[in-house]
Image (tube, rainbow, N blue to C red; front, side, top):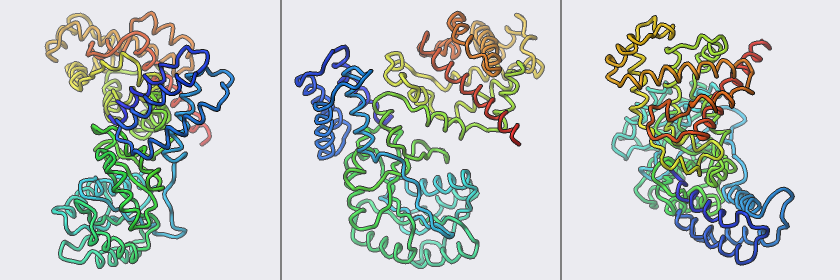
Length: 489
């Protein structure tokens, strides 16, 4: 995951200040050296690093200790503020035309994920704004580029305008825009051609397309895995085109995260979206303050909640929450919840969004095998419909049958049923507004993520309790919010 090493290095640098009554020049110098090395190792642009360290040093040297903050916390705050500033202070929304259509032109090198990003962004607007986008396939050079866009469009139910590979891209754009006007599409996405490197022919074609389309947005798709080269690519495109923003892709890959910290400083152009996964929904608005918080290991609760709200089926979730309140939550609901959690992405990444979890030593050993979810599903699949709906029917002989049917040890079946019962009781308490007893109940129940997942390397104790407390309370609050919403109607 991006920033993992950077987070660890920065945390160690800050740790050196912990417990000190004041920060001496020597302490600050040592910390700044560690921060500089951490940023350079993360492949952040050298000039950006130099400027960043100078700004942090100046603010930390001249600042009085803030009331209520110890020296280490003060330096963390200064570093957090400077990270946020370097990445752009706040989220920058899409430019929109005062009248339809809003035209968005996508540019980028081959392999950066441009075509996939076009479809993801169009789908995001379709889902969130009930928009009617159209995609124009103007990449006639890359083999199968048009086919790829058409497949994505078909899967996401978004129309694609294409004229094949033998027509000039400029003519394709002209006719595509005419089609969008005829269909009254409110968003037009132009998927332009990429090259393996920046060249004059590519840039001239992009300039011509921009002159024809007069786009409201020219977004550059940049591969985060290319590190400093990503910033240089953005700089090259920015010099030739009137870029309005950047989409950073593959931020979930094996990357050191330097691109996210460099691009705004190098080009002056905002990062508007980040791609972190293969699913159509894996495109998020870029919030500099949230990213800074994640880089420093302080979590990102807002994004986690938004992700849950986006990926969870709202109607199904409301029904399940109501069943929790009535204490009729059964194994059918349990499996549905498991699948919804899995749809949000790797559990390790979700846990790191919870404050205090990214740098928790126990998290270093987390290795949640997707097979563990499958084992739980296999046990439930071995149940009869009556057993799924009424867990109290499952006596010792039925448990032995379930173990045999799922090919799992009897101890695993017993553990799952016990934890399911405890979880159901807690959910009932939480969804009825009784938050006070949850911590006490969890502390004495021995219930933690490790036992729930069959011991698969998950840390236990307070770690598991924090995760579950957070999840259950959020579920309860969603139910209360849904009830208020229904009441207003």
